[in-house]
Length: 113
Image (cartoon, rainbow, N blue to C red; front, side):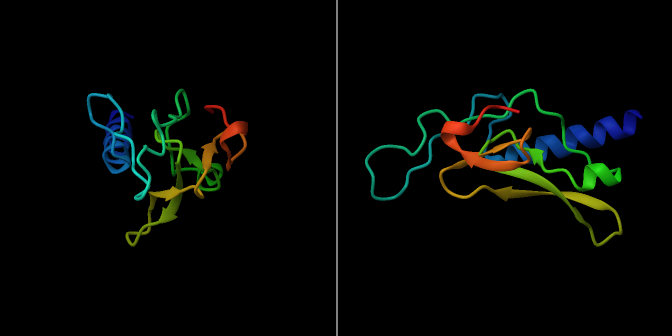
């Protein structure tokens, strides 16, 4: 069981780094949309209190998991080794992932988990 927890912590750390979060938890700098003089998000929406991703049971494999960055979500996919691994996927522009609905929704309809 301790080995599984270590593996989950490692996966979450990698996901945080891939999502652009700093390890100290200060968040993501705003992204610029190119031609605009202002950032797309002043504070990027975060999914908090969501269950950690797991790719073990059949139910886990068919679940979309919340990424810390709400503009992305996590799904399980087969690994070449025969096991399953997590994959970070983006939501469509202008939408955020909502775990309870298992889909990306418009920003006005979004709430964390």
